[in-house]
Length: 118
Image (cartoon, rainbow, N blue to C red; front, top):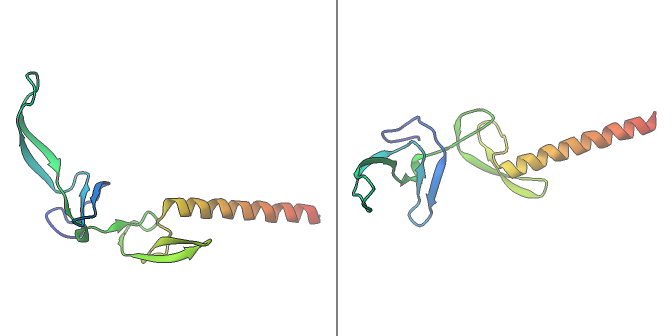
């Protein structure tokens, strides 16, 4: 969160509502709701749950540098990926895994080529 009563707190996104540009984040913007019992064996009472807030009040947390960051775009291995504006790390999990496997494959190929030369 970059604004509001929970400024500085972090959490996982539970739900995205693109029509209204709002998100629901676990443990952020907790509100109390009165709940009536729907069945004979249920209890009513006050339940705390996260409420939706505007997506502009949140930023993505970079896994590499650990800072809230703006997002940039870059083409890596023919795919457009999201990158951290602070440190340049790839934020897309699938792309970063593909990049890591490509790096391992190139190291294996270089090692095999060096072994063949000897």
